[in-house]
Length: 368
Image 1 (cartoon, helix red, strand yellow):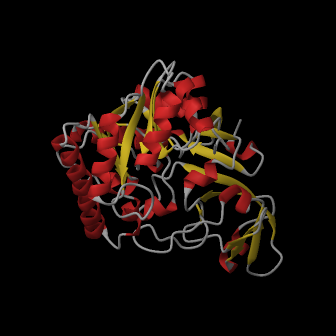
Image 2 (image 1 turned 90 degrees about the vertical axis):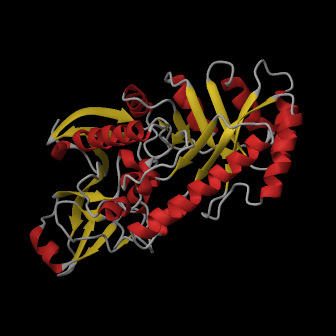
């Protein structure tokens, strides 16, 4: 099948670009002497997760238990859920997965430990947990050192939990104004993470894993301080318009949405057949990752999506309107690829104009 034969809208993956992204990140991790545990919430495809492991990844990261369950079905056996897990139903699902694979997950308070202890008291293996450290993103994770010490004391007393390590996510580096600030935020986040690892060691519980994650610093090839054992980038596999802005180029964007021009109702307006349900309405508003519009038209440099309805993309560009014809297919580079992939049932792996494989997005919708 040729790319132009694919019905639209459709998720395309340029195999050559993707493979370069995968190989370069693995080479970077190897050079920095850290393990690579890619976050698969970006691609949600076991086929690609296996490919990442074949290239050298030591395991994978997921966001939700549902994703872990699908990955386990496809033979992935070393999984970290980078999210706090609450509720007996979810913990029982992890307990079941732990019977066949190596699985760990996040905690950030004593209450988590108390609930895990109750659920895992009859489990054949202890629950494996990593403590999340909040490093500036303004999300989950331990903030105060005294609270961290309370968590460590509770873990010392726990009978059915194994303390595996600590982790953090420096997502606020996306909002850095320039490379210098990105490096500064990254270094502050890593140093803060390492300082909590020192506290754990002082309390007699050395962290086996010290894991950090966020794509921008790694795309900039920033040096990773000694003590970090693992990195968890996700978006690097495909890249997107916002990540392309970090490195100053869209050439490494492997994933695009193929869409058809369906209307040209005015002298400047063009409509295509993908909307918020296929490319989202997300944008980045500040910093290095700041994007213009709601997606870039790959074949027409500088042309961006002006607006979206559920099933329509709206482009206001008189020159573009004069260049395209009704029925013509163009490719959109999304602003944020992770939620876009989750909107599609399958992806078309392409090489040039040829479709080489259709890959199911098997973890699509697995948000529980």
